[in-house]
Length: 375
Ligand SMILES: [Zn+2]
Image (tube, rainbow, N blue to C red; front, side, top):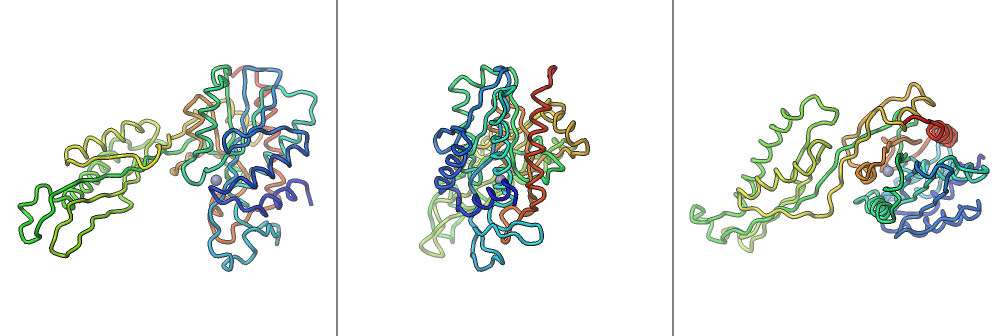
């Protein structure tokens, strides 16, 4: 068995459901130490810095170490932490999303470490909490700016090792806001609804109708763009009453707003404006996730195309960690072994041959990018 596959099995054997990544992070740190590579903790993230001869350019690898809950282990034909291989596929939670990419990244670190020198500053980041709110990459991005690294580079690129089957790459994704809308109305007897001003529940439903109309406008306004138009949809609604004939005096709803690079903060401002007209107050459930976008002619994309001429270029409609780095000027892409259709599934698996191919491709992309003189 190849080294990368053996390493992947070890990674799969350590459960690392979001919020409980620490054991896996310690394992990765030990693994790297065994290769003679020092990794330090930046909050919960594990970071490796390999200084290069050219201090003005940075190459960053980003892999998240958390996985989603496997659910009922009995529903798995191979245990979720087994890493068993059958018919050329390895099974287990995180095989595709994204411990395969993480194992390939570790293999690349090992190969680079064996070289006498590195052409450019090289960073390996193993981040936490990608599956919930991207807190890990967000924190790394803040740290990278605060420590002065972002300012010192004239060019920064990143590869997020999420599964893209190695034959396509993603250079953008939508952003999102999770919003809580709430309104205090008048409590009162349901037999005289016209006397209630405002009627909290009715006002909230009117707000939802307003948003539906707004979304139809967005569809027209942002037609024909790369990303599908911004969307907003309620994900929960709540108004409690102690009695069936008493109208609740409070109503709240949670909304999921998906934005595009051209319309991120402005989308939020627009929703706020509509809410205010209805007397509804809006608050953020958590920090918003920016949309990510790298120009398709960026040097990192050219490097991938030089290595894999037939690579397909896509954008993703879901949110991802990319935006936290593109926001600070990093040209990032999503590219890695595994299949996105396997992510979060029972019996998640990955093709072994693809995982074995990934480090060669990463190394070739790295060398191609690092040797580019005009950028
Ligand atoms: Zn992932």
